[in-house]
Image (tube, rainbow, N blue to C red; front, top):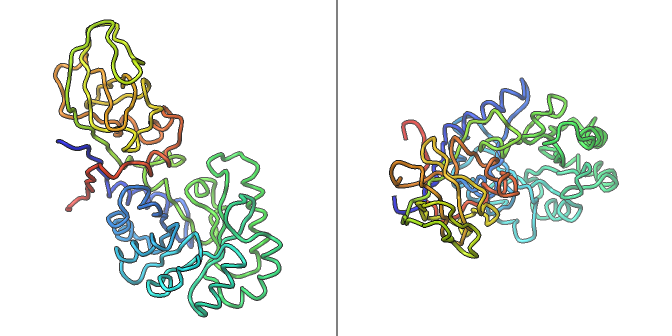
Length: 349
């Protein structure tokens, strides 16, 4: 293996979708969020695997991402655009049958004037203060807008990963106040909201990171393995330093492997002198600084030089590695670089 390899288990993604779907109970539809190229894992293969598992509605961030999903799946499944109807997106929304989640009075006006009769949803701001129509705006426009027949009213929880955070209940109450009596399908829960329980599920849930093995879905099947090739090894004597800045100095005769991968590939510099890589079941400490293209690893204790070492895998998932680097699993996943050779595994594929 001459290049770093990111292996993506499509069966695990499908299994994670099914498990989250089972949590929502009868009458609740489970969509799939595949924005940012399916969290960096390749939207074409991922979307097809999720559609095969049963997903019929997909959410993306931007219209261009929606185009990729539509190309992958063809007509039929709904592709919703969370950024709404942006200026310049009208033709793409129309031609590819995308469903914008309108976020503002400006977007509402644009959509109803440019594409009358075209499907849309509305995103409401229930306290996150990010995207969405605010309460006073909604009260003013709802009587007119509801006649146009939105396909979905949705909002987004800010603190769903913290089950006891008081904002969860506050946002739930606000969402009820804004949507009760409309008779329209509603959606509030992403992965964290699903885990908060049925009161948050409404008519549609929108799992994202939980599909890809990330927290807070602790029962998720692991999805990714990242194997970095060993390029060179060298013997280092006590007192010799390794890497930029001489931040690691050998205290004993050591064997150091230089492996392919670095911060240009989404492995943050904050992993320096902290992270571990794995040779099968054996951990190996990362020593010295993470550089742009290379990492150095102490393999003195291994009986032989491996061809590669895993930095993501069964012993260290994206959230565990992210914690070492002082970030979150979402960022770790979506930062995985384009230089990796991506291999999608699927039974029978």
